[in-house]
Amino acid sequence: MSTLKQSVARAIADVTQGMLLATIDIHATPERVFRAVTSEELTRWWGAEDTYRTTKWSGDVRVGGTWRTEGIGRDGKPFSVHGEFIDVDPPRKLVQTWRYDWDPSDGVTTITWRFEPIDGGTRVIVRHEGFGDAQAACQNHAEGWERVLGWLSGNFRAAA
Image (cartoon, rainbow, N blue to C red; front, top):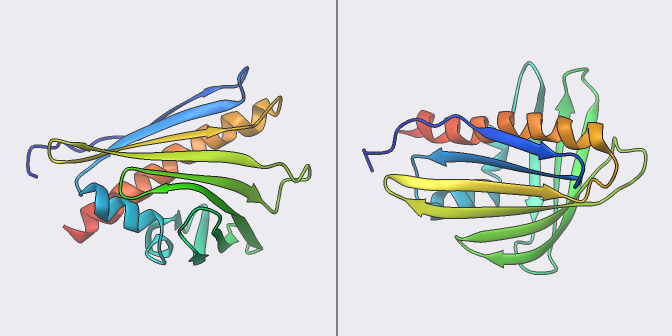
């Protein structure tokens, strides 16, 4: 897997459609990346001291199973994000609902993760949709996904 060059996460929001796409190429197999996203391993890489830190992950990774993360924000306040798995096809695809406790509208969005094998690793593609007319939230999440996918990629650079 030595042919893959380091990739930078990219995300673009289509605020008129209430969705975003984000992608990164990672020097790890789809199986490894899928596991990093769907296990307690997520707490090792999701977050940074200058933003927020995910401290707990739990989930039943099957269609209809639930998942939950908890963490600490930059301000020291706890937060949680949770949802349900809609489609689970390891190591190719994962679809989950996304509900976060700081959203006053209690809205639910949907995230589709795709893990595509490429020469030297995995292309991770995230489609996050369902923002409706919450354009600022959509744009903010696009910026957030660039950070998150960068952290995910960094997890594998540190392990190499």
